[in-house]
Figure 1 (cartoon, rainbow, N blue to C red):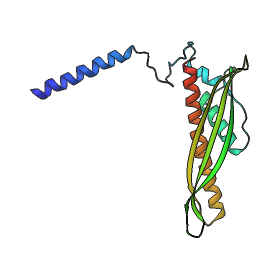
Figure 2: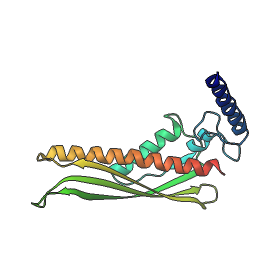
Figure 3: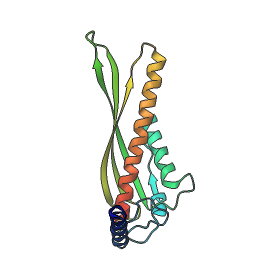
Figure 4: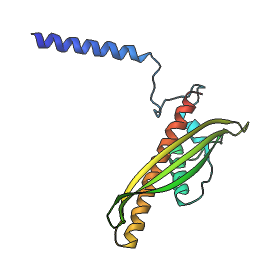
Length: 174
C-alpha cells in the first residue's frame, strides 16, 4: 500500500512542477516555434546572419559549417547582421619522449568574433570560442598530414557550434 501512495505522490509533485514551469517563459533555443525577444522566428534571425569570409582552409571550414547550420542548407534570408571572425591556430606538443620527439599533439583553434548590425554598422556583440583537438603523430608523413587535417576539421566543427550557440543566445534576448 505504501509504495502505491508514494508513487502517486511523486506523480502529483512532478505534474505540479511541470505545470509551474509551463508559464515561466522557458523555451528551447532551437525549437521550431522559438522566437526572439522581438518576436522574430529564431530560424529566420539565424539565417539573416551573413558570415564574412575567413582566410585559410580552416577558416573556410568554420564559415561553411556556420552557413549550413544557420540556414539548414536552404537559402539565406536578407542579411541583417554580419558575423566577422578571426581565427588563431596553435599546435601544442604532448607526450614528449626522452629523445625530444612528440608522439601526440593538440591542435588549438581560438576564434574571436563580432556581430555587427548591417543597417547601422554598430557592433552588437563580441565573443570568443576555443576548441582543442588532440591527434597522434606517426612515422609516415601522409598519416601525420591526415591526422592534422582531421584535428582541424573537428576543431572547426566545435568552434562553429560554439559561435552559433553564443550568437543565437544573444539574438534570443534582443
